[in-house]
Image (cartoon, rainbow, N blue to C red; front, side):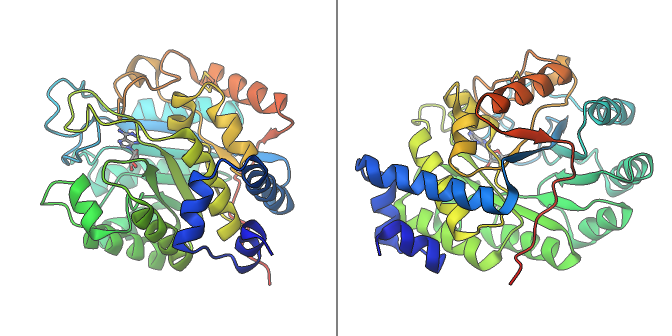
Length: 347
Ligand code: 5AD
Ligand code: FES
């Protein structure tokens, strides 16, 4: 049994196998990894891609993550927040375009109190009973997560960023805590959300050891979704001069995660599309099965600048929707009008 068969059958990987699979230039082995991951994705989800309409509701953030262009110390970042009406308009447009999941994402912005956010979630819930509501609003209290869930939210995306507490401390200011991030993820799961965790590939100070911990964390936590994308340097941040993450590592990690967790929802991220013109298509061909086209109003898109040179900042929602469909049709995949729920493991 070779490494890929072993990985596929045991749904586990050793630290040494991980390093080997990321660094090897044995083309046959690399292609076997990709092919096997895609076969597994096909077996669970078919040649279907789930789409999520991403609404970037606020570029304000109280945090100061060293890698992020929206960190509070970045005085050159342009700050905006959508009004409730703008958010509802995005949903209406999205629904017409065939989106059945809305992802409301933003920095940690105190303006979006529980009261405001619950009103928004319950309004969207009432207007679109057939849609999934995903939130990606960072760390909040358990009570807040519970209230938002009760208001009608179904899913929550909160990347763990790194499973190593030491590495976490190298990416974040002292007032942010790895343990608190872990506690948030646990609370979300206990409340009943479908949870997405994830990490950047090639973030500063990342090693094969920390990546190995990330994969073992994913195995233990069993999230419904895992979001990974390459680190991309953002200007006016402490990591502005750090090298970008590698596309090849990101693609191989997508395949590895697919083999570790065959049923997981795995997005081909915008960051991957930013570093390579065919990055998202390659992501799908390596085992991803989700994409998250942008539904945000075009006049604010360039200001949701987490990293530099982000794609899709000049397009309208309808353009991204059409582009997505065409891109994946060209490689033989269908973008479906579907909530795209997690398909639980059947014994
Ligand atoms: N490059 C790539 N991804 C980034 N994120 C934040 N900053 C960057 C960057 N410079 C990711 C983080 C965060 C998500 C919203 O975006 O993982 O959780
Ligand atoms: Fe936005 Fe292609 S997905 S332009």
